[in-house]
Amino acid sequence: MYKNTNCGDITLDRAGDFVIVAGWVSRRRDHGNLIFIDLRDRSGILQVVFNPKISEESHNLSEKLRNEWVIQVSGTISKRKEGAENDDLKTGQIELNAKELKILSPSKTPPFEVIDDLNIDELTRLKYRFLDLRRPKMQNLLKLRHNVTHEIWNYLSDKDFIQVETPILIKSTPEGARDYVVPSRLHPGQFYALPQSPQQLKQILMVSGIEKYFQIAHCFRDEDLRADRQPEHTQLDLEMSYVHKKDVIELVEGLFISIVEKIVPSAKFNKPFLHISYEESMERFGTDKPDTRYGLELRTISEIVTNIGINVFDSVIGNGGIARSIVLPGCGEYTRKQTDELINFSKLSGGKGLVFIGLDKNIQSLDNIQDDQYRSSLKKFLSVDIVKNIYNFTGAKPGDLVLIVADQAKVVNNVLSAIRTRMGKELNLFDNNEFNFVWVDDFPLFEWDDLESKWVPAHHVFSSPKEEDLIYLEKDPAKIKAELYDLVCNGYELGSGSIRIHDRDIQTRVFNVIGYQKEDIDTRFGHLLRSFDYGAPPHGGMGLGLDRLVMLLGGQDNIREVIAFPKTQTASDPLFDSPSNIDSNQLRELGISFTDLD
Ligand code: ASP
Image (cartoon, rainbow, N blue to C red; front, top):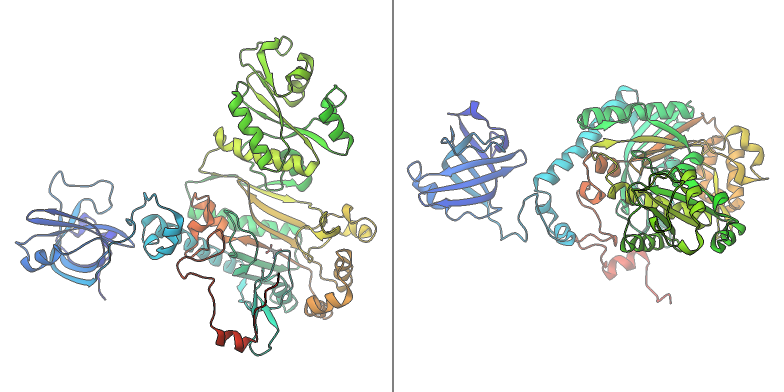
């Protein structure tokens, strides 16, 4: 071994010990006769002193050292001189008096300092990810991630689950997103697909008698990226036989409570988790991923704002739209600039704008509002009485700002939920150290896709309709609720799951609703349906995003911070410089040539 102890673990009780350590030079200070090095390994920092009186040779050599050189040092631990202690460091009471120094590997001058407080662009960080990951913050996040997976393994193994690995090269059976595909050399012109999730494989494992399965699985989706999405993400995938919705929820809730309690013991979180239906979530928060740490709930106010002489409201509502509101406490005296900013924001979120009404905070009673005590984008049309009605109905108070969006329900909800998320942050309505978990269930089985003019599954095609809704399957798909559940935390969807269809006929009927023809069904899903013919136990499960979970537990707002080698927003990897061209021989072997498709 190059070392017999870790730098960051040495404390005062080791004074007098002879140790051998190895690591990176984190900082070097030349104090004339003495040279000080901060030596860093994964465990932390150790101060090393090169004193010519102890070893002239090592002292001379230490003059050459620069940041990020890898060295090995041996010597004796001693207590630091009085006044030279550093209480911020675990090793701050001691130092290592170097006897022997070996340079194991020099370093070029790094493009950035290996420190937590870093202010450089992400591309450089990703290109030099090996340096970026050396930073204590990144080391801690990777350790946190390890601790989470370790707890998952322990918890689920104790509950009799077994881990089964499923293949990465499978068949293209899209689950909603675009597939990544891999050309086959042995079958020219044919392709494997990378799994969007092991969904069908884990269902087949249930038919194979595994009963309780889990896997930390890589999932690949060729989608446009956002801050919390990657082309390749990791999910805790699990499946259980002979379960109802309640059993899966209980299992996952127990696991998550255990993860939070063991891994972030200081975190505040709700136990048991909240439960709300999809409908309630849309009604109260305008989204199925509500951040339930704070209120700012939406209200439908179509009735209050129609037939009061305001055309925009009358025409939108007359055309099947709705008007909904959100109340921003304490924002009633927002300046023109601030309200303009909110209007712009609503447009960026897909709306056409919004109506605001702000009341002065010194108004004593809503019965006595003076004309100069409120501001509104529709001031000309809004009488004091209407303002009073709106404030009463929405529960707003003097000093509050009411925002109203009128449009088709989907647009209204998108805009207001985006405003709600933004204002929750801006108004400091939550504690950063708090996790609020909520189960959302009773989702519709299908959604209408306007672009394609057809029904699409709200989750995936394998989720079971509620038994009592089966009668609507062909007649009225909009009416069917699914045995579907999502786990949401602080506004992020952590995972989705469902009780699955385990009956060939029902599965075929669902395929038919979304327009799959017999050949489609046979080629894409024949393997799964065939397994259902040989005794399929009722089963259900979930897929839970590991990256997102670690991101939340680690207090980050970008999943790239918790993935060792992430891709950029344009799905490229600046470290390997991928994707990249492959050489013509490889292409020839695969039988691939390019033509200009335009
Ligand atoms: N396969 C699903 C997904 O990745 C999760 C599940 O239903 O288990 O979203």
